[in-house]
Amino acid sequence: MRADAWPVAGSPRAGRLIANLGRALPWLLSAFLLSLMLSGALARNLALLLMLLGLLAVALPGRHIDRLDRRFMLAAVVLPAAYLLNMVVLGWNMRAFDRPAHLLWAIPVYLLVRRCGLSARGLLAGFAAAGLAAGGVALLAKAELLGGPLMRLEFGRPMGPFSSPGPFGNYSAVIAMACLAGWLGGGERRAGWRLAALLGMSGGLVATVLSETRSAWASLPVMATLALVLVGTRPARGRGLATAAAAILLVAGALAVDTVRERLLLGASEVQAYLADPTAVAARETSMGLRLLSWEWGWQQFLAHPVLGIGVANFRATVDAAVAAGALPAVLRNFNGLHNLLVDHLTTTGLVGTLAMLGFWLGMFRYFGAARRGAVGPRRLFACWGLMVLAAELVFASVGSMFASSLGTVAFTVLLAVCAAGAHPATPARR
View 1: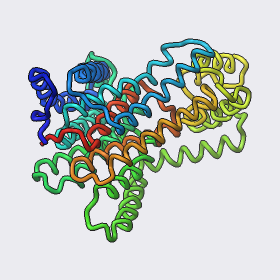
View 2: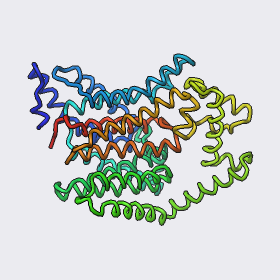
View 3: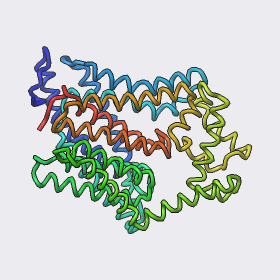
View 4: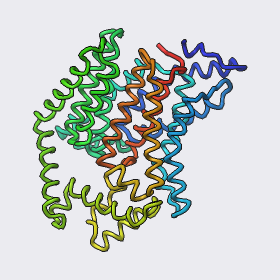
């Protein structure tokens, strides 16, 4: 059913407004994806605009919230609610709540797409444009052209190599694999769309490799496997073997790149050095050494405060005190978490917050599992994209924090909401 023919009870004017929002939505999302690589401020403003449009769409007559919608909203609410409870008991710091609150932003964005509809082809165009932009930014940074200010464009810090290499590499990987899934699931599309998907994937992979972000590299075989399993070719016979072979080839190809191989070997040597002597400064103040040290310290804090943790609002003061006492190096003052999803929540929110965090992941995976049952065509592709975003973020958060960066949080929540709504069986179809 066409979205602009979707009935809106009792208000032809509201119906026209919904139809106009539906026509504008692919352009807004494409601009959002592109701005992630070029202008952080623009990306945030577009995310805010999407949220406000979602509130407008919900306020119009004719809306309908079903059981699957409620499942998504409950999964999105549970973790911010746990953060608020933690601050009620242990002290307020609304700045610490800013990034978890983006999960609440996801609800109106989700409802906007649910109300207006979105074509998979339109979102794929946005992924392809963002992949090409990411590759271009990474190549310019590698060549050190224009001295670096190109990455900022005077509009705010993008997820570029000169500002936020971690989220830049992570979401370049997501965009690349989203293009792969679009190519695999686009058998009926014209050659031009499939070529765009391949170009976007190539650009995203270039940016992922040049970012030197190990979490992004680790996520590639996971997302590629999901793409092959969920939207790969039919019939299914032999698909498991083909998926395993493709994942092995992807890993082998990545290891053949000098930059990737050297970074991985460096990480392994840092782990070995820390395990050999955890008290040595040279072993502690490395990328992996800092992670291992912070995990050990965080576990000790959890054992001392098991129910609610040290408190979200008290994290910075507790780290500062540990630095002053010599238990942690001063560089850890620059980080907002402990570089691990589980340890981070155990430390700051205790068992209560950790259970809420697990509830979020379980709820979202169950949502996509329910939405994917019997899904075909675009719905199947949206479900694949959503599961890829979830799986990738789980990998990223295992060696970082769930809300490690502002732009990474915005990218995750908007993409999660859009893909979840697109996978819903009752979302109006758009061509």
